[in-house]
Image 1 (cartoon, rainbow, N blue to C red):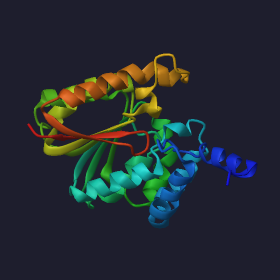
Image 2 (cartoon, rainbow, N blue to C red):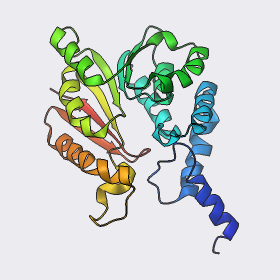
Image 3 (cartoon, rainbow, N blue to C red):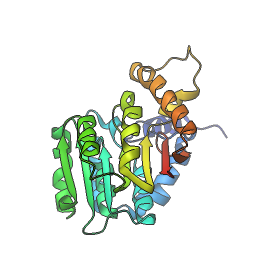
Image 4 (spheres, rainbow, N blue to C red):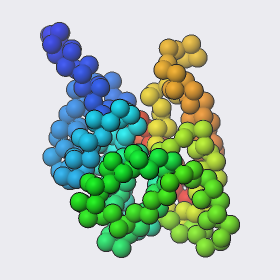
Length: 247
């Protein structure tokens, strides 16, 4: 039986939910995943920050709820303790990380906008994990260069998550591969980029999607041929590629 007009409107409405970057063709299936797998055990601080972020005008920048759950699980599986995040926004993925780390775990978090981070900071503080976070405002590349130059951070990070300026992903990668330990993981977000990676050249795309698409395609090609890592690209959220350093 064909869906009613009301059902079609509800389906379209779900697509506007904050963090709805799912690549699934069916919004109903995505909603099923959220309601049966993500929301029932979502920590209260994660729910609070997710709902707070939903009211922000740039909420499309946030990590999706299912991806937040995925990151939290991965960090626990690899027993991560020393991590880094490039691109913080209001801190949803940062909170997912902080909740997964042990009490003495640490996150070096970098973003060019402290104001957005401070929107979510009260929730992070209330969750009791703010002491794990070292936030630095400003571009990440100079900080990474300083860390490499110092020689004391090579191979010290268990996990690094990148959700920032796509045109610099390859620049980040060449530095982060030095900083993550052998056997450690780097996660690059948005590597399927709204599905545009397989869109024909004349496809109607939003301006920002079209602008960054070539950078995402270049990154994907580079990671696939990089012998220093083994990779796994997953259709979680807007696509995430995990890179495990092997040499």
